Length: 300
Image (cartoon, rainbow, N blue to C red; front, side, top):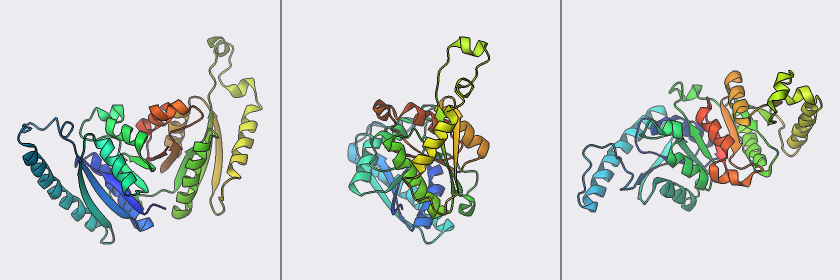
């Protein structure tokens, strides 16, 4: 599925968390990996105490020399995992990192971008990281957003269970298409879920009503039927598929289910029925990425 994997890096420890996942997918799909370091003067490294305003050519030369040395470290580590990994290293200058990353992905027809939720700054773990956020908004291909894996052994890095939230929109159909392809590649199971979001007046809670299912028992079977109909559009032969209907805020329900059932991957779209969500990364998608216990594959 993914023949060209782009891995942006600022060489921080957190950005390197994306590498094991990129290696795993590349070995499975026999893909090429491109490591991309975006050199941007105004955002390069505000935490560097040795930062100075020397001639621009001198600054670029120093940064590129340092980047090459760190690239060599990464490639040596990759070779320790497998000699079959094909890795290119690229440096590009630009105004902002996300423009360099998205522009390169479009120019070189990358199939997948793999990156961590944040880079150097610890705060960006809370804020999702402006670079990751903007790449999700502008990238021409899916983005796998990851956090530090529990182990470095690629054999134990698995995608055996996949959770696919849906609001039945066209964009969520695209997410399901990717999930089906991944499930067949990794022989994984899929759970297709929908969370019914209904806000109640406080008086209902005082009366003992805690769920839409209490007010209308037919809601759950109706949604279940929609999920079954949704599945008819996909070739899920050979895949164990489950459906799940819950009620509550979508992002809370997705994260709660991912944690309780220990899913290996969440696949979802940034767009839903509300098109403005595309510009906000979709409040649901944004919140899921921040709190998810597993990697999240996101597409626009």
